Length: 112
Length: 112
Image (cartoon, rainbow over all chains, first blue to last red; front, side, top):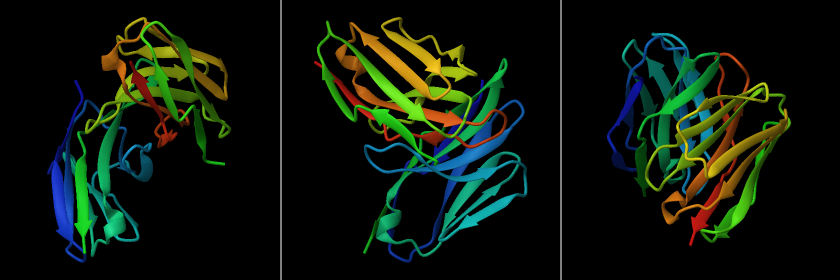
């Protein structure tokens, strides 16, 4: 069974204090790993797709990396507006259909 | 157009009511999903439609009945729900294959 674990569960940073979020996964044949941002009461917002180990993607203050067992979301010099829950998800196939399995998320709070 | 529209945004229903949640997309995606999300938990997969056919049912109780009338619409019919069914219900769509999913803003359902 596919498993996705995220750490830490919650993270509090001061503005400008860089850090990394971790996503560890166990899947039978990774097809894709996705990072999402979710604000309270809203649907997840797509950030990045990573397909293979060694791949990196970057967007503003965020950078996602992938190894064979885990992915990291690096946040450089965060701002209060980066406060949200960050979810990673892995894609696997069940028959002919694909499904996303989500990790438990990291709740990030950035303070002034 | 990268938007997935869900209606209504909020819904309060009694345990004997029948109601429906709607999801609409115009991105030409052929995979459509229903997820359920409880507070401080990750989205939990309920159903997957692929080319308007139900492909995955994650052992969801029969009081939830999905329907895909055409390639742009996805419905979730609700009947005789329980208070523990109160949650944020999310619709997502994606292209077939390895691709990111786009989520709607969700319907906040309260069962009283």
